[in-house]
Amino acid sequence: MAQPFSKGEITRWQKKAKQVTIIRDTWGIPHLYGKTDGDAVFGFLYAQCEDDFERVEMNYITSLGRLAEVEGESKLYQDLRTRLFYDTLQAISIYKESPAWLKRLCDGFADGINYYLHTHPEVKPKLLTRFQPWMPFLFSEGSIGGDIESISVNRLKDFYGGGQMVDEKEVMDLDDQEPEPRGSNGFAIAPLRSASGNALLLINPHTSFYFRPEVHVTSEEGLNAYGAVTWGQFFIYQGFNEHCGWMHTSSQADVMDEYLETIVRQNDSLLYRYGNSLKPVISKNILLAYKDGSKKSHKEFTAQYTHHGPVIAKQGEQWISISLMVEPLKALTQSYQRTRAKGLDDYKKVMELKANSSNNTVFADNKGNIAYWHGNFIPKRNSAYD
Image 1 (cartoon, rainbow, N blue to C red):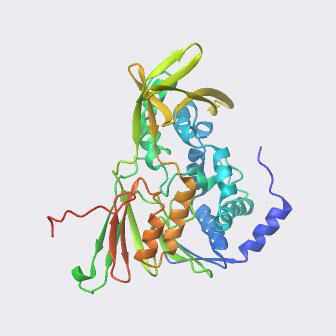
Image 2 (image 1 turned 90 degrees about the vertical axis):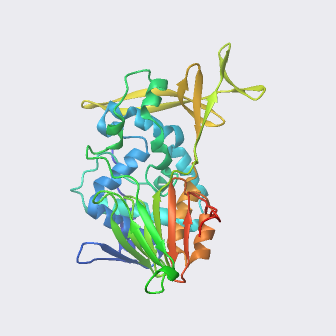
Image 3 (image 1 turned 30 degrees about the horizontal axis):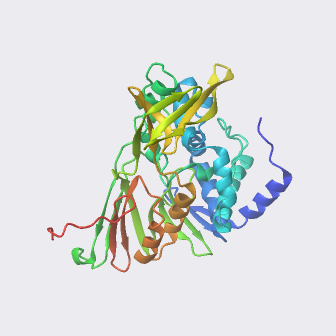
């Protein structure tokens, strides 16, 4: 049952709303003006909800591992995939340990969505009737999905369920539309190569209409960025400010590792071989809910982990565990701080957080610098080429 919003919350949101101005231009793009960055984020999410609350909610239903509660039992293994890596207790803990400036942004995120729901009682959420400030920490990087989507749901079902295969295409298409275009490309042109003598940047994301909205967000604290936003996140994913611009393309950088684990059963214990020693397999019970006709049912899984990460499949008698980047605090910090970069040096410092695992980055600034990161690293140029 939904928790009603308190009078104190509503009064606080109304006060914050007076600190925010939303102006929509001829094309409907919101231009957000806030006194502080937190106020700007409040308006940022309110405007996103005005445009498409359903996509905002669905991204968080998915990242919470609760998709089966909306779409039924067929989504259980997609939820299991999510919950092998993320859970709400982890996200709450990260939020509590976050620096004050980031907490204020996360508070603005939750307040903006909740105030939208308060002021639009005709909007009926599918599942999430109250958003929490720890929810932005349910992602390991700036892109929705990212590395985790490369883990096969069929392999998970074969290991944990032993049942028939699921349609992986259906898993990707959350709202039964055509699959989103893949890839993207961007071009940075140095001043030497441009007619104007300025660096040029082409941002060309390969997505369907409205997969990402455009937003202009500013604050009196110096925030001033324009570009594309992933529904439900509070930073410009790819775009520009008055100093520089950044474009992300899908990366094939090798940032994930799978391990073949040799399992040894001793009495009632599960062990795995590591070098010349045996280590215990860690078991974790994960209870998932799913829509079952007009009622809600539950299914419990016993997830298995080695020190490499969760077990996701098997090969013969061996199990396969996987290691991938799960750094929500670094990822959110990097994703937001790059919107405030004042040039290449600032941007390089932000990229040192190395939380950009599934994206390449193409960059240009107003001082004539251009740059490229392959995943988290600037590649070394082959000196044989000019």
